[in-house]
Length: 312
Image 1: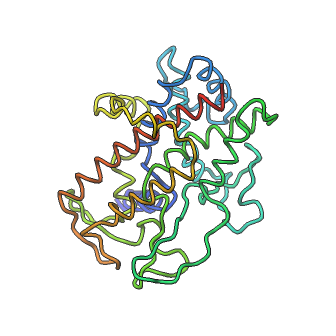
Image 2: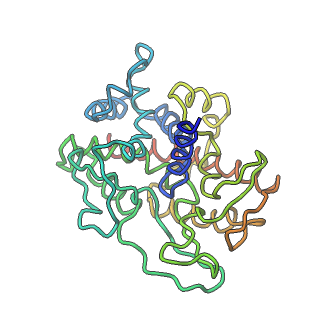
């Protein structure tokens, strides 16, 4: 029993960190929906690049015959989180000289600080620190620039960047991955870390971090089959985002959208400016689910449009 408890606690701590977004379900649903919107030529290019990822065999193990490429694409969306548990990868600091490097699979730093962009915000005039120079937006812009074959980048680097891109597009569409709130009660060097310092009690009854509440709105860990089934039967794949919004392929714009949503909705009443746990209202939870569904659908459409452009 103690072993199970320790393992569960370890997983909870890992999942509630600032670098985890949507958990497996949300990331894989975004990837699945995007894959259905790729042109045949772009699908073929993406499939070929992902075969270079060291986890490709694991991604396709057990996939139905003929669906190996689709399963790999969907599973690849979690790879940037998976490497945080690999013993041959190490944690680094955003201030390290190699924090912003983009060199391919030879890079064994897990770069957990690539998963978010802290746009700083204070509702009460609390002093704000200087922003960090490396984040999800800076790195995704680098990756977008080298993914076209005309960039001259190696296939190893393009494969690495594609694997990260499948994940980072999802991260940037989670509102609490693009904000850090500083208040008189929650300040310090990193503020609230995107809602990780505030505690909430949802209808399920447990006390969890606000960030984790938003991350898990599509569920937790899932198989590829489960994510595809949920995207199909829960209606996410049937949501058609505004075409003009889906055509916006600038990560800076995505981050600003999420920042505005977080200010107006993620930190809305009854969320407090201190660390006191608050019970979420039905209105808050309903609004959060609706925003999350719209962001996932929009993120999937943008991911497809982005790949159709850079891998054409």
